[in-house]
Image 1: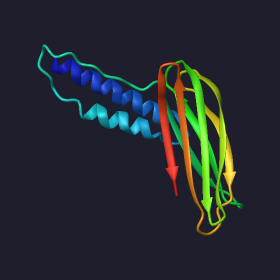
Image 2: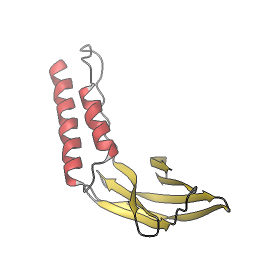
Image 3: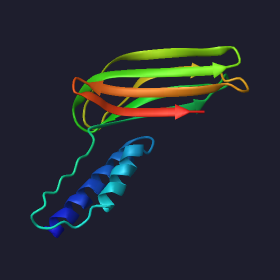
Length: 149
């Protein structure tokens, strides 16, 4: 049984590393999956072993621009998956706060990366931001990513 557990752990690590190599930017979940694969412990022969790999991961990429910061909502599919996304940017400064809200449907094939939304904020001195991306389907939340300044 211990050999099976280690073989499954190696398979999960190889899958996570392959997914990270295919993406243009190392994904947070790929490194988490690889770390989880190495933390699998030997179990008694009667204990069932379960390994779960997320079918999707999401991230908010920030890119400095001449006028401020661009925020890109990105999803990577590891299995066929579809659902809805909500991408919310909130900027707070001396004048108050404002929101940009984007959302809609998405559908991803295995190995597919999709930019779901993008928006740019000008950030004057003292301005703060919060960016939140949530992906969900009929059963509930699939993925969540939050960035703050």
